[in-house]
Length: 67
Image 1 (cartoon, rainbow, N blue to C red):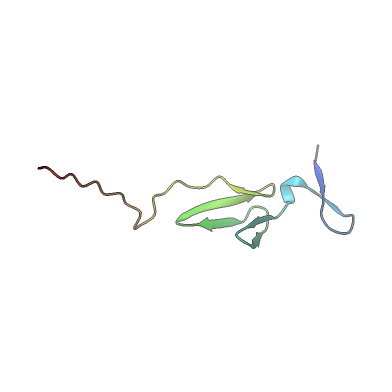
Image 2 (cartoon, helix red, strand yellow; image 1 turned 30 degrees about the vertical axis):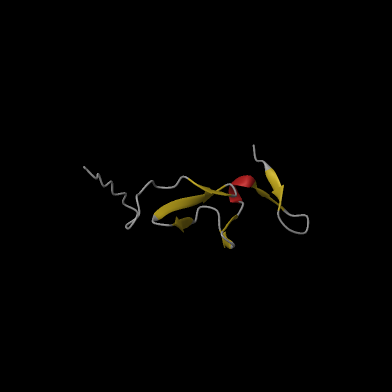
């Protein structure tokens, strides 16, 4: 069973073939999308399934001041 969505001029495509739009960029279904230092996948019109890496330069330092 396919869920069909309008594509252009009356044509329909399976929702699994829908493109993704992220940050003004258009990605084809199945494409890898880089977000910061993580890679995500374009699936069914949504960018998701991202890796959970901590990007360089985003390390949190905690300083304790003892009086």
